[in-house]
Length: 427
Image (cartoon, rainbow, N blue to C red; front, side, top):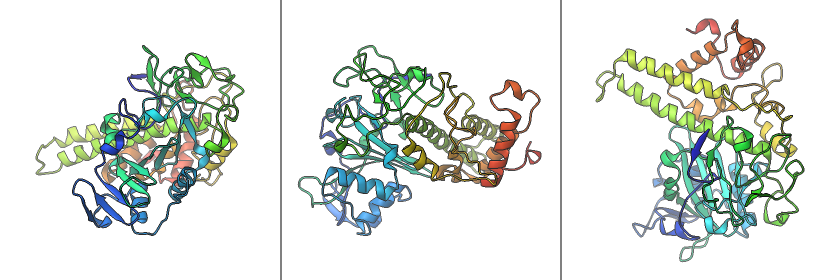
């Protein structure tokens, strides 16, 4: 369990009003060119650095006129951005805690919607800018704001580098948090905030969030406003009775979508942090390094980081569902399963369990992510060796979270879809 001082959302800020982000504009791009407000001049969009995350690629495509976003209405604008980023509408989850960048716009009556896929995240609240995160394979999450137009500038989509997001996203890390709130969405005085992952008990999850779907007999903090639940926890299949359907793209804030989000963001953080550490170690054991490290020490540290990441990828500390499991939206699950990588027997790391745990096969689908693929080659070799070693059959598997049958299935899936070395090739 991790306790923190800010509330439930992905893009957070403790202070600032409705237009505070405009004051912090560092770079703006419109459909006709790249504008630096600080320099008060126009320069080519080709000078924008680092275009390898999905949002940067969209930024460049809009600037070059290759993509036109629909600015006819807020809803049309949001839909067009999701379409271009290939983010499913069914991934929608809704947070009403009043502590994000555009906090004045957010309330239990007007929650902020978050949509996501494996590589990007989109936050939207009516009347505000879109908050975007694109995951750079090497550098990790990159933060942006996108608005249909800004007064005084040429009409059209306006991108901004999200410098102001780092006031809460220390080290550019992604966040999903939980806190009890009052009737206005403000965190309750003295309320404990939780940073939530797949390891968190359901009893700590989703304070400040709407949750549709069933958690069985396990209680959670979702749908609680000023200590009162907005509807019976097991009967919340949609939010139609609370929020007008026309306001949001779908009428759910799906429990399974929330659980996947919690696993994905925390695993992405682990990948980013591990890659950064591995690159530093590899640089320091290179002959002639400015801050040299003995090679034996460096190799030992690489293995330590690899083992820590393997533990995360294999759901070592995942919370066991004890209340009969969870039930969520078929629409989200169908959208999520479209990206399945399938072994010869039809199994995939994206297959859901939902009875006692999130996924049927206990290895993260994030091993297929661009961030995993971009890990330093020398470190990735160590990582795959340690993963294969951890998946060897063991005599005491009955006391482990993985049975030998689980291990065999994971060896099959990862061997065929990731090129996992055989256990005999590992230390």
